[in-house]
Length: 81
Image 1 (cartoon, helix red, strand yellow):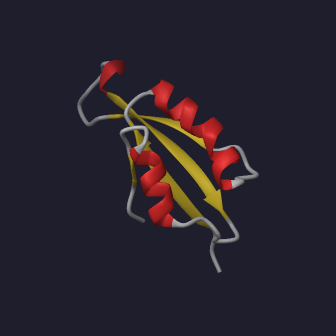
Image 2: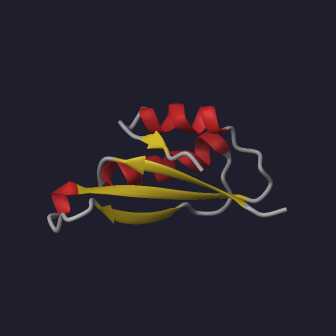
Image 3: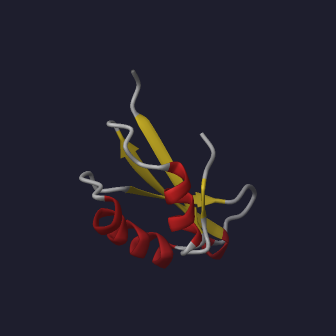
């Protein structure tokens, strides 16, 4: 059985940093989420970059709907697998 990886798409670095810190408290995520800058296609300007928060879920215990609602609090969303 393969590991599950959830990807939250957030509007900026501040939101991604804040959400990463809150994830451990709210969902009990043991492993530090990975922050990835995702520049929009054809855009070089850092202001147009979204940030991805990659959360490993090897035990498949995180609820997708709860993660999507959590990301929405930061004006983001959970990327569909």
